[in-house]
Picture 1 (cartoon, rainbow, N blue to C red):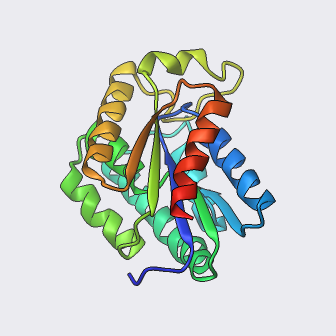
Picture 2 (picture 1 turned 90 degrees about the horizontal axis):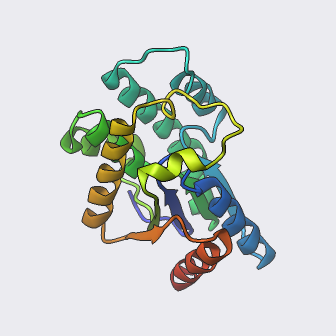
Picture 3 (picture 1 turned 45 degrees about the horizontal axis):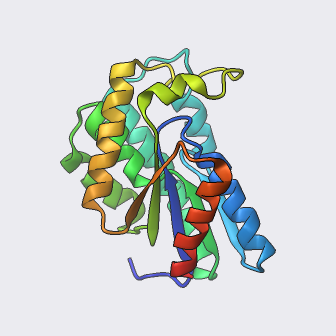
Length: 205
């Protein structure tokens, strides 16, 4: 895909790593500085993709790993074409909570479907679009139970500790292989993380 005019930033990390908080803070700061920003998420971001999200995260459903993978990619294909690409062509800064690295970590490694499989499907779903920078918020698996005690867990958040260990391993492996990825310590205070992320994004802007 021909490179668009805008800047594509992805916040990645396991469940409860602080992606949503940092994406919101980053979007608010850039908007206050006069930047046009699209803050979005995966799965989701469009009416079709949000419908797929409700299926994927429904704790009452049992979804086969391959079905799960195809649902994520279908959601991503719609999201990329309908929201991300038009925003980039318009010169906006796109901030997405999750993108293809999540699929590598969750379905490729943790589900055991393989990174070769996810690489092919990721490329098809995105038409080859890649983030300008992916920021991975890394947290130990033990941190999961220390955060957000009040909310109901979705289908993936109810997975075992063993699954979350595989997810973390998958993320770190994917980040190491991606020259545009940066790993940050997700246990740092939110304001400290915000400053580090702003510095990284500032270099791209």
